[in-house]
Amino acid sequence: MTTISESKSEERLIIGSQLKKARKLLRFEPEEVAKEINVSSVDIISWEKEQSKPNLKQLEALANFYGRDIDYFVRETPTVPEKIEFRGKPEQSLRDLPLEVRTVLSRFDDLCRSALEFETLLNKKRETKLPHFKESEHPKNATRALREKFNVGDKPLSNLRNRLEDEGIRIFELPVPEDAFSGFSFWHKEYGPCILLNYNETKGKKNFTLAHELAHLLYNHEATLCYIPQRFGRARRDEEYNANQFAIELLLPKSGVIEDFKKRNLSVTPSQKELGQLANKWGVSIQALGYRLENFELIKKGYIETLLEPKPFRRRSRTPKWEKQLGKRYVEISFEAHQKGIVSTGKLAHSLGITIREAMREIEQRFRK
Image (cartoon, rainbow, N blue to C red; front, side, top):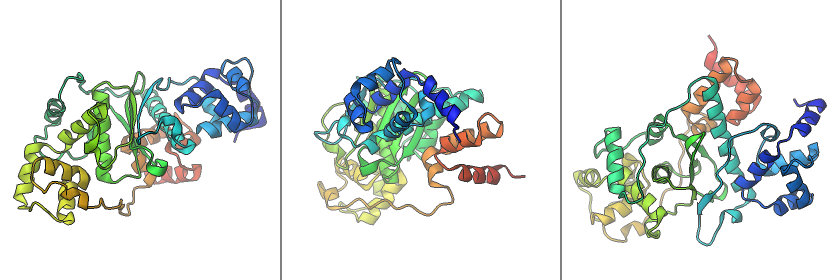
């Protein structure tokens, strides 16, 4: 628990650039922040330039507004993306998103930073082993090279998240309020390649988003925040269109899908159950599979529009929700750092987004003799 003396010490140690980073990531102007915490915009600018300091109450208000802990403001951290390409819903900008949506980006940044910190402390920094493609490289050629790397031929690409994490990508899933966006990705000079997925989406949709965001990374696009509609085939021919094509080619290779469809002896109007079984095998949504099959003229044109994507169904699992969101690799390295005495129980709990009591219970279950 923070003492009064510690709080006063934190007030003196506030780093102005950290206040600015927190604000810039969420794309707020000083005037907007000032209005929310009941100060003047001159105060916000003055604090960021370290010409003056916020008091503890103001600092807490800033932390709550930015979705950060106070300790974020007292030590230098890696930079946040200067520019974010927002490809959201039509006629919407990043600044139109509600605060609770924008602060998901703060949590994502914290996770990437914690992962790098733990890896550095344990001397386990990951090597990135991914290829890069020029914008002129057609998605078919790019995905063919990637499938050869994974040695899967034209078969379903299972465990894509695990495979990409093995290649050095940091991948996290967090609930996105109102399903305001599907994914976020950037290639950071210190964190490396990072992808955020909307935990609320179906497994197939998340897999497609993962492949879509992977395209942005491999084609060296700017930090990108994407909303991917079900009818993604109607996107303009831009970076989003190419990322969708990359995802389709990667997850649904032509020869493999056609062979599987014919082997099942399906009609031009297969049932939703039949399409669901096929989609599940290939790790995509019914819509993504349906559009692909329409393009191959295997099912009736427009037929997929008559079907509804099933609502997300989550089987009860012994694996806690927070562990699914953070991924096995991040969770394991967090507990290893604690076991070796590098981080405290409080730091562990914070990095996992759980209470100290829950963290202590997990420690006991994982390491009892």
